[in-house]
Length: 118
Image (cartoon, rainbow, N blue to C red; front, side, top):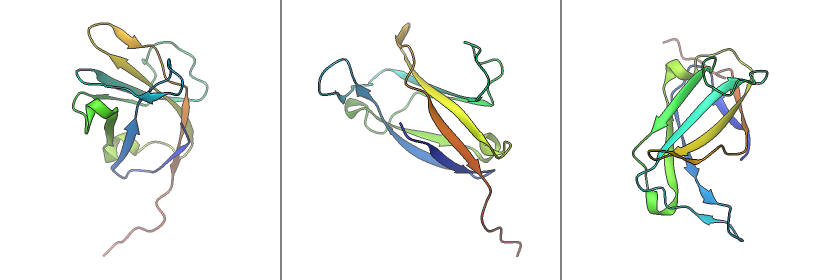
């Protein structure tokens, strides 16, 4: 995954496409019935759990599950964190862990360019 830029304190949505990379070439994974869990942490947070995560997201309803498509919706409260670069990963669950962790990707929280005061 690439680095995602998010404006500080602004709600946003990101399309996520999940691939099965156990086959060559990778194909979009059917995520029907799976839960997508994302956690955003400071770069120096090496804990295996999410106790110090800045925020987490749990996605249970997907845009097009048979084609591996879900949407990550973030609230203004979630994105209202210090301007910095953070790390994130994604996990898939059913009753048991399906996919341990995605590759780590980065999130840049950036300042809002213009604020309208009127």
